[in-house]
Length: 198
Image (cartoon, rainbow, N blue to C red; front, side):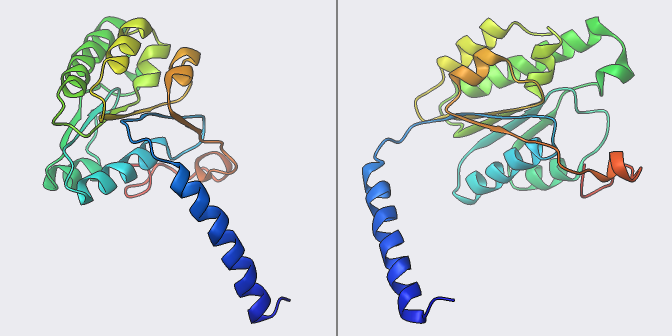
C-alpha cells in the first residue's frame, strides 16, 4: 500500500497530465451521438443527457419512434421540466404487424425530428429508437443522414436503438455500444418493470 505522500505525488502527476489534455481540447460543436447495441441502457443514457441539458437551461426535444403504445415514467417527468417529449410510435413491430402503419408513424416522427433539428433554438434533439425504423426500412438512411449533416453548428443529436447503420456510425462523433452481460428478463424470467424499463 502506498503512503499518503506517495499517493499525493502520484495524483499530482495524473492531474498535471490531465490538465495538459484538457487545455489542448478547444473545439466546441454540436455532436451526433449514437447509442446502440443489444444491451439495456440506450434510451436511459440519452435521457440522462437530456437531464443534463435541461439542468443547463437548454431547449431539448425528444421524439420516440416505435414507443408510444404505453405510458412511461420519463415522459411525464420531462414534460414537467419543459422538454418537448413526444412518443410517436405504435408499439413493437412484432405487435403491430402492420408495415404501412409503422412506416406512416415513422414518417410523422421523423418529420418532427427534422423540424427540431433544423431549428437552432433546440440545443439537443433525441431520436429514440430511430435505428430500429431505419433497420426495418421505414425511412431512407440517406435522407436521415442529410438532415443530420445539415443541422445547426451547435445542435446535439442523440440517436438510439439496436443495429445502428454503418453509415450512421461513420457519421457520428460519439458512438457507444451497450453490451449485455446479464439481464433478469432472460436469466430469471423477470418481466419489464416500471421505473426500470419504462
